[in-house]
Amino acid sequence: MKKTLSVVIVAGLVLTGCSSSWNPVNWFGQSESVPVNADPNATGATNPLIPARRASIFRSNTAELYLGSPIETISELLIERRPGGAIIRVTGTANRAGPFEVRLIPDETQTDGDTLAYTMNALQSAGPVNVDADARSVTAAVWLTEQELFGIREVRVAGRSNVLVSRR
Image (cartoon, rainbow, N blue to C red):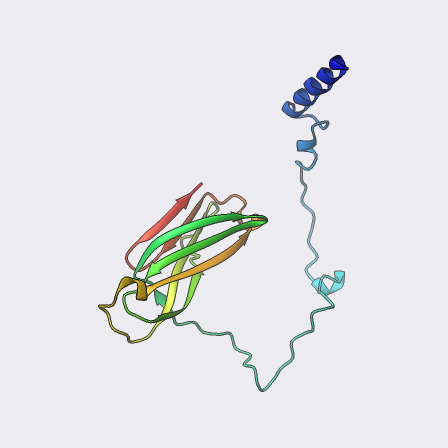
């Protein structure tokens, strides 16, 4: 019994260390390129349970225009790992009291293959400037899946006066 158990354990350790097709870690390692069908309706890729949008007099057909400006200072950048991805949570301090509609806007000019870049924006009312920092503090978050995070080594969030960076 001890002899067969030790043989099984040694064989398992040897197989996990090699790069053969017997290693379960390597079963999905190789990939190949296949052509993509340009028409999603031809393959039935649309979800039949989601109704198609129709024109309505109650809904505007134009895209929403967001007029937020960058937050003054980014004070905290946290990347919280969760099953299936991660949450990027950013806390910043506005230069005036009363910021609202806070968003993390992707910054395409700073984003490259291994870097995600965001700008923290908010709409700001004409409130008082010299108010406690807690009244001016805002938080925004973005959920990213593991597929979106694949290959990302750095997350950068910019405000008006500083940039916070988190690296792997």
